[in-house]
Image (spheres, rainbow, N blue to C red):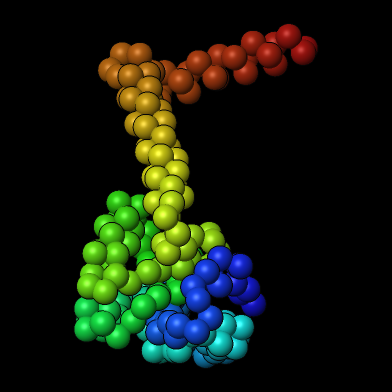
Length: 190
């Protein structure tokens, strides 16, 4: 079960915070409903642990594996309700539930923050709370890791392309080379 970190208690106890839970699940047609119910119960437990919260609801998009990913109607409804001023805080299990792309994630968080009134987000697993003044630091760190990984990938691809450029390393030349090495080794054993 998901347990909230202490940073969730940063707001005054007397102020009621209208909380929405957003979840996106990749499921098959045979995924048992108990898996989704387990997540619902963890959200209900969070509400019990935070009496200063009032639930607006659970917004859940289902991506069915094997089908093309489509629109995210529940996310769109969440954004609409935020624009209407119905939500103060969105709780998300982890960053990847909101977006799998770091640039897109930062844009989404910024758009929620720029709404009037501003809507905050809390990512449970990463313990990122946008109500804190330094909330962008973890995103910047993750973004830098992602960029570093992309740069290493580009360097590796360039290296492979250079080594396999015409005339240097063809697959047939490599096969002949390894075959010759094996012959030399087996001759030495006799």
